[in-house]
Length: 149
Image (cartoon, rainbow, N blue to C red; front, side, top):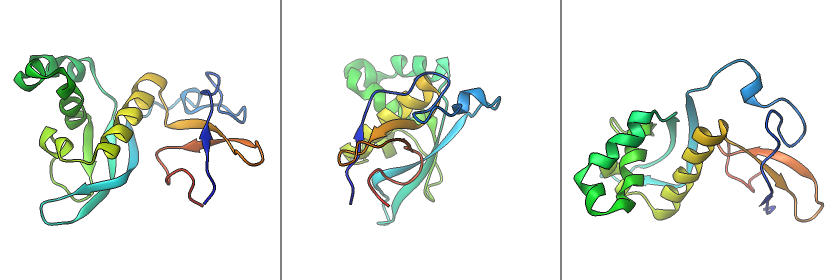
């Protein structure tokens, strides 16, 4: 397995190879597919890895502030927020804060980064550099996991 080291984000409007980014193609994406590093284990033992996250609205970011769980513990904001913007996960019928709070910490960390990328940067790509040959390329977090061939 080849290790991949992330570098600085590519310049706005282009990816690491200089090609136009998704923001320049005239199509606004509002939903982004992802694959969790470990996966959520449902009550029946099924592991759910693939899901979809939608862009957050101002309402999504404001409503958790009125949630009693968030008022007691501000760290719970992430759980409530992710429960609102994840629209599907495997074969689960509904996603809410109770699903997110029972995810592995590594999956929640992945989803926090994914949320930041799609809402702040507008895409799921990262510029990476091979540590062995120094080749620069773009990897998509929404695709297969980094380092896999």
